[in-house]
Image (cartoon, rainbow over all chains, first blue to last red; front, side, top):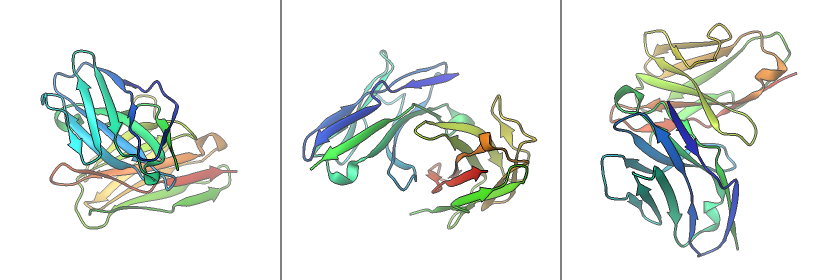
Length: 116
Length: 114
């Protein structure tokens, strides 16, 4: 079984500033994947970044990076140079290994508002 | 990029009727699709895994006779909410897995049962 916890229901950040969204997880899988998804008002889920648990190096995608602390089961998302288009719900998710990789367990989400 | 389309995007129905929601992968074949349910201001909950040509695998607590899933082709999975009631009102989202292991989400379908 997997659980994902996002402790920040809402956050705001000034445009061009940096913000970090928190996520902790628990899993019984030996190998697993972690994801951050963005859900804008249009409701379509968009993959922001993905981390494979066996990789120690933190994933980075342009302005988005993660701080993956495997021992602490922590997977935070850092958004640099925040833009107005980053305003959305952000969901942290975990997936198992093999066929279960994409049977995702989502956290409750963090609503991020970027303020001009 | 790959596109997953859901239809209808919004449906309103009377209590007791059945509603079918389609999930199509427009430019790739998806042997596996997933159905999620999202209540307002809540997270996504996995309902079932849909595999082409075989029966869907339902998560614990999801009524398979209530939520019928059919994955008849490599590009189409359907979710039928049978004898819908107001408590079934929700946002239903599908995702599809392509051959490279990339996962793509549909735009979601909002169901309102009166």
